[in-house]
Length: 442
Ligand SMILES: [Fe+2]
Image (cartoon, rainbow, N blue to C red; front, side, top):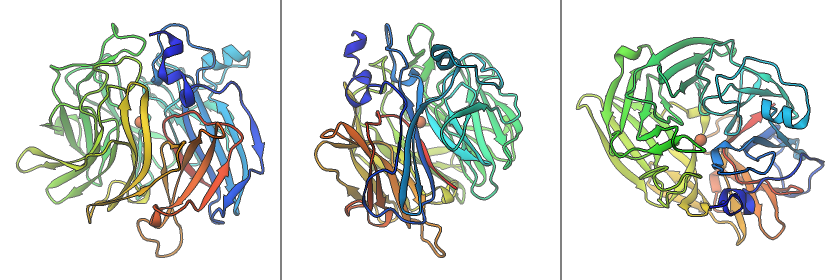
């Protein structure tokens, strides 16, 4: 396959050529006046056309942000994160901060923690951005992060701590990190796993930390992205008490599969409930992206600590990814979960509707977009009104509009996702399909 045929470089996966700023954006509908802050989402956007093989996960990171204030959409900005390859290519001064261990990238997630906006990629050092999306510095929480950090740390809504980890190709293969509510690294605990596996995300409950040791393994012979499926590796989840350490981790077998993203996890008596998006395989048939032509389903894994077993059940068999919940309930029992319908195809993810799961009733509400309008990740933004319920708030994400060859920021009422959007902010150009983001309130 030549680079130009790579589906992750064509259509709305393809990069945009430059950075723009657009102000006073046109809005259809009415933006909620109490949404004050910025929606920022990141994804790959190669700075120069890739030569040779290209894997979607390795493109230079670009953030796309929209500032909302008092019912207005003040601006849209897109900016490359100033990793060393980007500042070198642009002839700009290098960004200061701790040196990355090996891999200098930032394309996977954006979070707000302890007053900082951070962009993240696994195995790399986070970058801190300004409110206007300029890169300020590399930031390692006071460090050290000798094997980098994950793109999927978890903010504890009760303590304000940030729980994270890092995986690596050499021992220690896995390290658990805790960052305090002020953004300082306070604990690093090496965790013993069998080998160098790709661990994209993990789970934290009020009492436990859960690691996914699954059969995507590091292999330098697999290029340009050195990971592949291993039929012989097995699949396990490790459960560690939050106040315990490596010696306290208990491992439980699951059916081989790959999980990029748990939706949420919580303790339930002597059980731990893990709602996960499960891919039957990953990087078994493709070396350019997550396109093994499989259907990723929403599954519930119940870890029975007394029986020493994991009970696996399917909650929804339609393809879906990018699961989210109301993050004020992270680590505790959730009733509602959100995801974007998606199937792994030869041409990348085929995205469809935005899904709202009611896991108490076992029902799913869908937001169906008009033909030619394609969503990406949608994030839940909780209402801060007194007495707000779990699904009182909004769902927000970029939607590509093929008719305009441009994107919109679409805001749905999370309480009533089947209805027309509350507001649609028209952006002057397209936002390429990407990865994760956050609403970062003022
Ligand atoms: Fe992810």
